[in-house]
Length: 191
Ligand SMILES: Nc1nc2c(c(=O)[nH]1)N(C=O)[C@@H](CNc1ccc(C(=O)N[C@@H](CCC(=O)O)C(=O)O)cc1)CN2
Ligand SMILES: Nc1ncnc2c1ncn2[C@@H]1O[C@H](COP(=O)(O)OP(=O)(O)OP(=O)(O)O)[C@@H](O)[C@H]1O
Image (cartoon, rainbow, N blue to C red; front, side, top):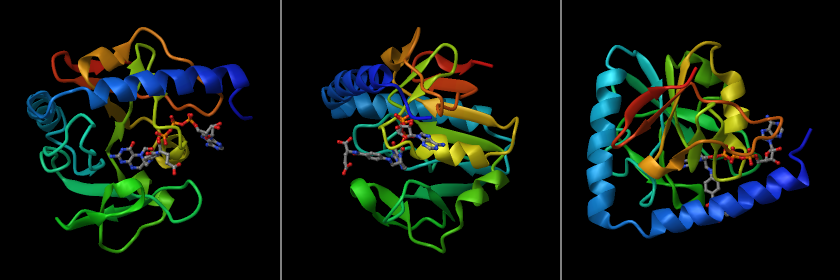
């Protein structure tokens, strides 16, 4: 079942204002936030052997410090030329621009089900609610990807402080995160 028209328009309005907030942040504020986020994630994920993460774009929290600060073998997403199922590639240090201008790994692609190898999944979000509801960019990529995560693994979203909110609109496909990190609040367990 698709999102209702009310949920679709509520999400669109929220995305617009959250993206404007991100665009307004200075480069210095972005690097200070990235420093803090990287420190919390490195500490909390210390014992993990396989971590799925992503490469933040310039306006996203963690830019420049993720995924490099994360431990273990790293799986990074590759946006497909067609469709909305993310593929995965094990990070070997090499990145090149892909769809939407996002940096992506260049090595061999693994199928969507490769996410099942991850002990922890670090996900991008525009906002996260106290009940774990996540608002993304609107592609539905992560809602589809998280179907392949092993049940019970930690799914942690990375947001700026004011993007951890009381509530968010949710549709039938939305997958909840189990934790969230923000630069000032650190790690919040939500499940
Ligand atoms: N760093 C990072 N990597 C990520 C995500 C992310 O949010 N951040 N994704 C999280 O899912 C996936 C990519 N999803 C994305 C979905 C939409 C847009 C985007 O810019 N959409 C345009 C519309 C462009 C179009 O449809 O042609 C827009 O929002 O204006 C970008 C990434 C996988 N990798
Ligand atoms: N597992 C799924 N199967 C089919 N459709 C889905 C699935 N997950 C999401 N969708 C659809 O994809 C569209 C976008 O979903 P949504 O608005 O939740 O994206 P998002 O979580 O913000 O984006 P992203 O995951 O790319 O960051 C919606 O129309 C939603 O109904």
